[in-house]
Length: 333
Image (cartoon, rainbow, N blue to C red; front, side, top):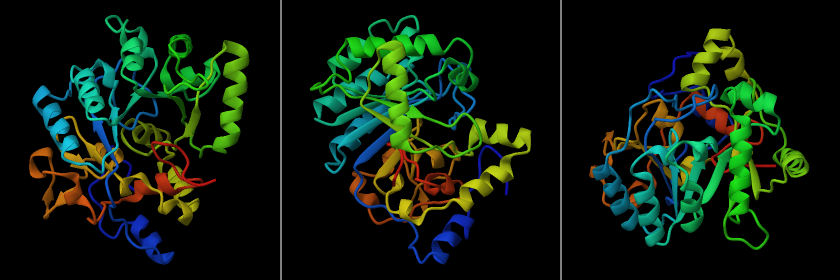
């Protein structure tokens, strides 16, 4: 298998062939309930597993005009209940707060995919209060509850600011009993293996974070490391790419196929291009509408995308291996 950071659209790829062998239909989109927007690739961190390849040296940022088109599409698409903001560190982009305010004005749920350390970045002293004040659901990356494993994946000096950020969010009411402020955590494996049981890991996190730091949270999501961008390059340098892809393919779970997130999600790039999912966005595999790559200017409502085929590739084994993987964690027990 190939191991570059970006793969072209693969016709007759191994994933589609596997679906055929299992008697499963090719993927098509249903009603779109989540609009996931990557507002840019600038980030205050450069994590080893990052499928976006985000970091402090990235300059891609969503323009104010493009953000306005996102809001108009959201308003014209009543099936969409959730605006899911990601990056980079989405909070460090100028359009983040306006998008939050407008989506909340429209009555939509807003998710912030937060790296936690962004709360300690100079100029972001009021970020936690902004999130709480607007009822934003925080999905926070914390690949482990130990300093050693967190910093092995995310860099030295990251663990303590992450813990302090979680304490800050708890102090504002996140994850309290009876609170409507949701705080979920994300686990990514540190190495080249699949996540363990989501429920068992969640219990381990609760015990460790609660006993050691007095931290509480709502749910833990387990997400498989995708062989894309920085992680793919890391695999290739170590000579592990083929073995990792073999691991994903050999653990294909047909029960996970029904729940893959691309069936109900559309991804928007920082430049306004549309994709079937965030992973396809990073592979520059476009969502096709009437035979052409789709963008915000090409559609009036996300309802137009229902029933269209979803572009797939070998990386899709990452979402269907083991218990499955999505932006909301495992797909099956």
